[in-house]
Length: 164
Image (tube, rainbow, N blue to C red; front, top):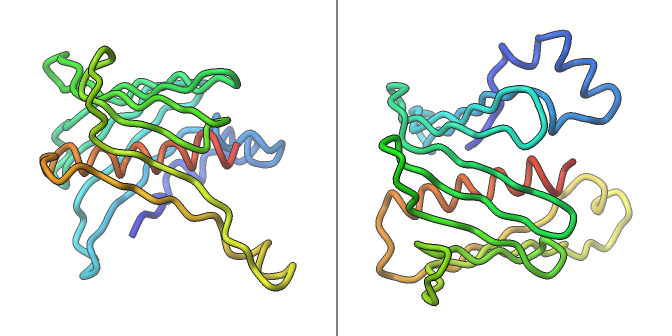
């Protein structure tokens, strides 16, 4: 489960940004929990356009920094380890509906794909209430950390690009 913590949502600047439909610019702290409600990780973004997103474990130890460049014509999310080493890059294609994740920019090996598709619904009400669906297909040899960061990249894509 992924939910926003209450502190940033109470900030009057964030409330103003939400009011004028600029929620993707506001600061956020998201909490990721397992099915038993145990905190697994936190995602934090400061207020502003294209700000870095910090990923922490349950004890607030930094796991990664996601550097985003989400423009209309090109989309990129770069995962950087706390020591500064780049370890994953996601590039958008097809109008940012498809992202392909590689270990390095020049690598030909695609580790994972992230695809957004609208779910057809029989009624207008269901179309407005139910959202879109994201599908992640990964190589069977990716590490647990890579898999986790790819899931966080999907959250960033949804929050920062598709819900903007």
